[in-house]
Length: 361
Figure 1: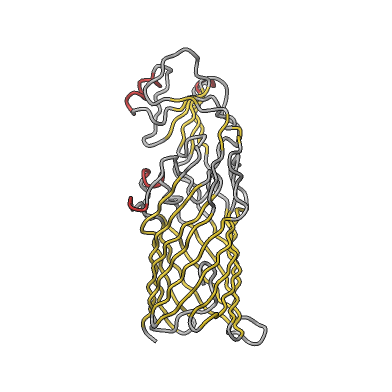
Figure 2: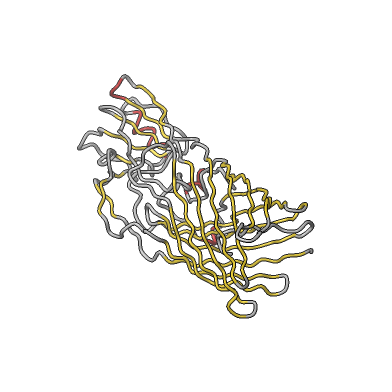
């Protein structure tokens, strides 16, 4: 189907190559994402295949503001203690994403996926065909610049997924359920407490695990043309660092699937469900009013911090200062974090396109 997996696996010696172009919206922050992915599948032995995927380009547009700089973030508290959680909003699959987007032509790489799928049962009466898969997802790059463009999480995650499918005349139905166990963020945040004896505290960010589900159907409407309808989604679960705003995602897809010889063409329209309301004015949280030095030249930032007795500066980290006195001149690129920010979520409709070629048996 389009995003919902059926339970079938490739016969031994069969090889499939595919290309995906997928456009989808995600909250919080009203992100508009386009993934360009290539994939390979190979039937190894009876009932077992291996597969590989790579997002060769990822474009992320952030129409709304990012109220607080992304990790890794150094928070220098000139007075008082560390900010209380939650002090930021985050889209968990892209935790390092900044407000500077990327275009498809920028060729910012996404993530690698490698896995294996085995079919445990064939369909027998009302009992569906059933398969399970296990996969690892890792970063295409760990460069801080690419992660800030939305490349991914920078860590390695493990997924376990199951698919059940039924066939009845011209109708195919499939259901998916799975989970992804995530790794932590490295590097993460850090607090430098100048007003508390110059203490330095690490502030790790713990990501949630994810649960995935999907339900889809395709119906052979005319000759080789299949009409497809799907629901799919994911949500966070488990212990994690609190965020001001976070969400999973769910989508409806409707489209067509057309086999032609050894090629298969699929095209779908995606509706992002339960989108965050557009134009909401939300509180920035505990870091409202702090001085943001993230865009200040490194030398100017070091000199500025040194005037307050702060010598620690992580390369590539964003930086904010709380308790900054009024009436002091600011270096170029510095700004105060606003008390509120406004959501920007519009459109919420995307396209999914896939072309695959199968060779062998």
